[in-house]
Image (cartoon, rainbow, N blue to C red):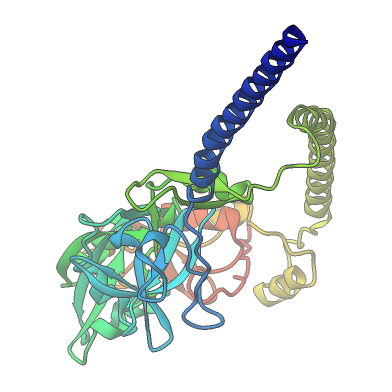
Length: 402
């Protein structure tokens, strides 16, 4: 009996010990899980989007709206925004306040402008050295102040005056073009300043001769780098209040695996590229064929008709973009003398190269408008265009009797 009793007691103690070990192990396991869960929950700061007005730019990380959003909602003070009369405003340390027109989070670009509607004046003093921003494409512009009394440069449409910097006595221009700089310098214009302007296009100086610089300033930032997160549809944020490390959350996982997407892209991309190339070649050949047919259909006027009949004959035919070599050579040539006397008194400058005529230069006149140009300039122009560069009228062809 006693032996049986002690065996039962020993078995009970053993079960109690096993139960105690099980409970201890469970508590230890839970203690390891609880901190991990807390860390995951507090790893990112929850912030809601903000706007200054309904149609204004959405404000979120790395920017924050003061004082509506907490400091942890933005990356640092350089990205702080405020609302000024329902306009989103950013303050640049050495340049002052600017209105924020748009924010592209995927491209990491911000477009700003002057709240007082005179952006060129702000550009002259723009300093981005103490900011995380730089120009998307920075292009060099030179400002000129020209006397208003000399208005001959206003004949040329590429020049756009800066109204807010001009007055009754002077007109201000800004140009990225070296040729336009030389032209303005020759017109008694004073060079004000040369600055770098954040513009929208990489080849700005090749497409714009002069600008009033009223368009937005296009700025970008490199840090924090949230471009990949934004492109994937995620939400970029800061990990904690005491760190500048960022984390990407709420990423939309694609329904198709990555390898399958690559296979589909390659399988569909190569045939698609070949089809597109074939269509391009087909369209290009058809266009060339049409051009050749049109040129063959242009009638040649008889030699015995006069100028008025020739003009009517040409206007009734098929219009060709440029002129051929014999037609161009039929226009009168003159060698300019020392007096520089021309058929038109105001034709002292070639409207193509913007250079003044010099003695002993060869000029060509376009009938019947009698506009003069450098022979080399107008010959190249007429090969591509069948109209006068100044009045845009189609010139009459001159037929010289044998």
